[in-house]
Image (cartoon, rainbow, N blue to C red; front, side):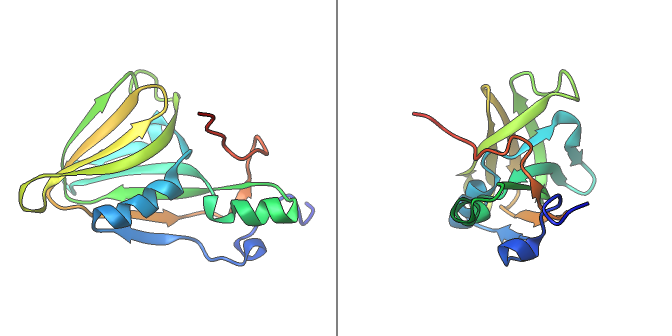
Length: 161
């Protein structure tokens, strides 16, 4: 194995991300970091008794994209866990559960507040899919769990208008 086969957090001079969101402003930051994350439908889990919903994502490292461009090196992805606490109910729109191997892509996350701190966290997915989580209070965590690796396509995700 050569030095360029496996990216390291040290290459970008950054530590693995460990962030939490407790309000809509915090969530906007997490949403920008998980944009274009991909995951097989089988990597979504709702732990009803623990009131936790989690997804193991293959997250594009947006925080490193400018440095990768400037240094002319590969863009990176990293596996991350997106965990939502205090989940009371989970709903989905679209055909996201039909095949557990279906690869889904996150477009954005938004919070729709309800009374007394409750609300709905909506994960919008590419292809008209969505996951809505009714929560007692907004608490979302994003944590990188592997070393970064070269993005398989080698390209930065693009969103033409």
